Length: 213
View 1 (cartoon, rainbow, N blue to C red):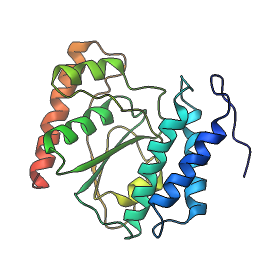
View 2: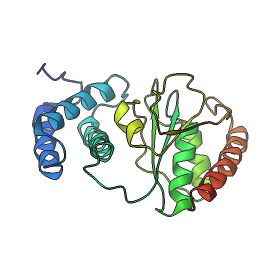
View 3: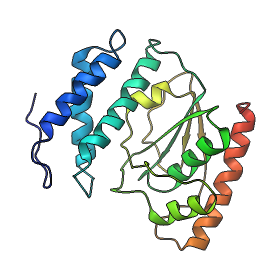
């Protein structure tokens, strides 16, 4: 195992990461090996660290990201049952379009659809104007952060929706793939982002109707 990089603002993330490894190994016992848990935790830490602007909360975000990856892996292996249809939104930065769509699916489905999002080249934070537009629509998002795309979440998804990320998303047999041609909100004023959000909401409502949610 390579040494964990030390980022400014963190005295020693090793202690926190090792605690996450122990907790997640117990949580996913019988579904995922302890070695896989350890690898995913440290891989997730390195992946998020490449783009994170603020490193202070990186170990906490790592735990959330690793938990999502491990859950997806266990689902893809058939070791963990899905409680709802799984939808994955993929865009380039996972900071705008995919975050809009994911928040709307979570809000409008009221838990009847589980949603994930990822980016082929994730940004360091979610677009603040996107968060403002979502909040104005009554969809407050407090824990969203850009995440890199990985095979685990693709394999676990029932529907994969790409939003301007080209061919970055791997294709697996038996998956349903859609491509939504939605404008990029990056750098746009609130009025333009609101128009994009309206477009996304219409598509999301159509998707949820198809899924019976």
